[in-house]
Length: 148
Image (cartoon, rainbow, N blue to C red; front, side, top):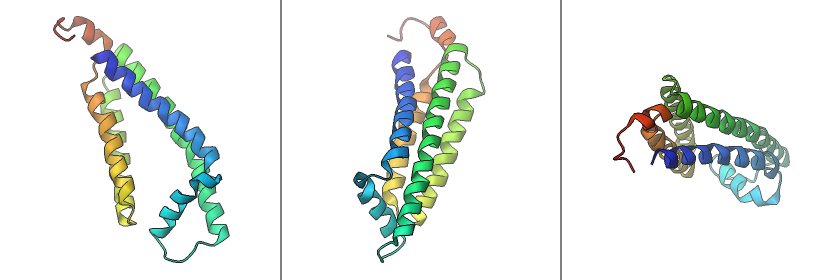
């Protein structure tokens, strides 16, 4: 079970890397237009000016590498925790997750982006629950064999 939790968390981190890199380039592609229309509709009922559209797409492109780098750091911290059991890692990851989820969801709800808040809740739970259950490798080796 512990290996499954560990692999899941690494998969989540690597997915952030891949999605962040995709976001960096896809924000300027036509496939992203429905998402930007959804964002704009939350703050205005007028068509957005071209300059505004370009600025928004550029900001999203810049956000992609941040997401990708977060994914790499997350993978590194999960691997360190699993291998060495450094005590501060798990509470710090959970605090970072809570900080992101509460602030991002609050801002999203304030601007009428309920879909973001729902996605945030699902993403946070898919990370927090496995992280809470994950134990360092040393603790797993010393645990009784009943956990199979």
